[in-house]
Image (cartoon, rainbow, N blue to C red; front, top):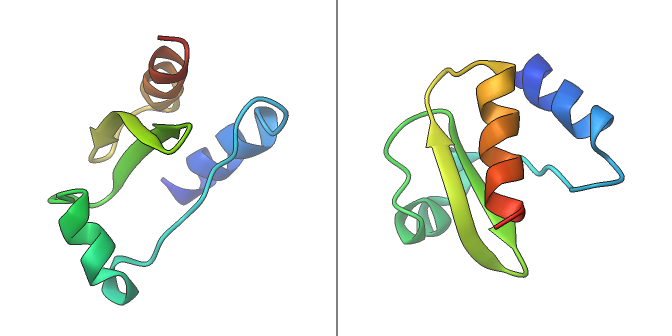
Length: 72
């Protein structure tokens, strides 16, 4: 999934930012956002959790999740 996420980040760099977190080094954050599957994608807008997806999903589905969350 990393290449897909990198491609989405590159293609949309003027629209939104993509960040990656190491769950082994961020246990408090994992608990706070109830991350149960790997990978988990959480969409934030203005500091608020506005969408999420988990598991191995298609590039189209991940992009749809992101855009739907930030356009609401």
